[in-house]
Length: 362
Image (cartoon, rainbow, N blue to C red; front, side, top):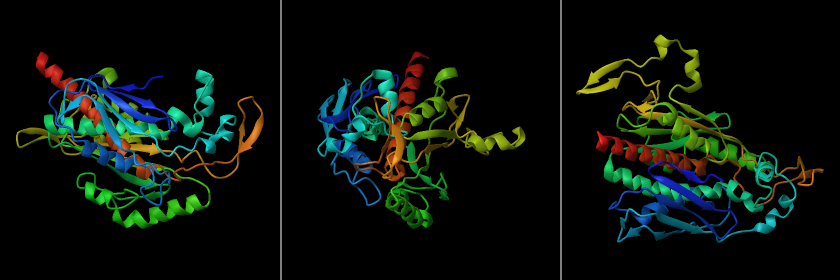
């Protein structure tokens, strides 16, 4: 099973949803980078369950433990391992799922591939696996702050179901996003989005939506031609997040409605730097960053577990029905915001370190 991401700044996540714990091993982190455990914990707290009344009530503190790779607050250049121990497992809630495939979950496909699976909470397919990614990205964030300060990576809920927020990627702040439990950057949409999520949950149903993410102050030159284009790695990173079903950068699919004259981003000089007068490319051209804001959007499907009966089959091939049990999000978007930020941070850190290798060779 592929659990490794990145080429220079590499991470390897481990653990199952209801096992002893989950975590990450980071390899390729430069030495002598100041790393704060408090900053890692702060990011995990943004992702953890039970943080508000519109997310899953699973009671996990998600406390991070650093096992290796850091001494006196500085990275050693050796592998960094971080673990978060599971403390609120309820595998009994999944007894029925051990023999019945949950619709739109990974139960059947894992059985088809491996012939075995961890039925409790979905095992590796659970979003709990993303704890390792968020922890690793918190370290990566501190690498960026040391080697290239000023880069900002912010994500927010752009839409919930058919409710759309109006957010300016150039000016939205972390304070605005974190000021509300739905994590949208549009204060006018907070209450209506919360109400929609609560209504859907009461009905035993679920909804999806779109998360938007901006990378500001990214230097030009990051990304590789052909197969390792910056937007290609961003797309892979985002579509590796559980429940994702779509990715756009810049104008995205809407750009197909424009002509070339309308879509192109003209160049001009500003304070001795090459800039563009528009940004329909989304900050990436030819697979390489051009110095403008990188703007992406990620589509999340409705949560697969719903509390109403659905048709399914058993692992022995018999038709049956299944109703959802356990503790689940009616809408994953509020908790997915820090995960989107994390994956963008990992991609950018990896490409920044790769570019530094190129610069040294030159």
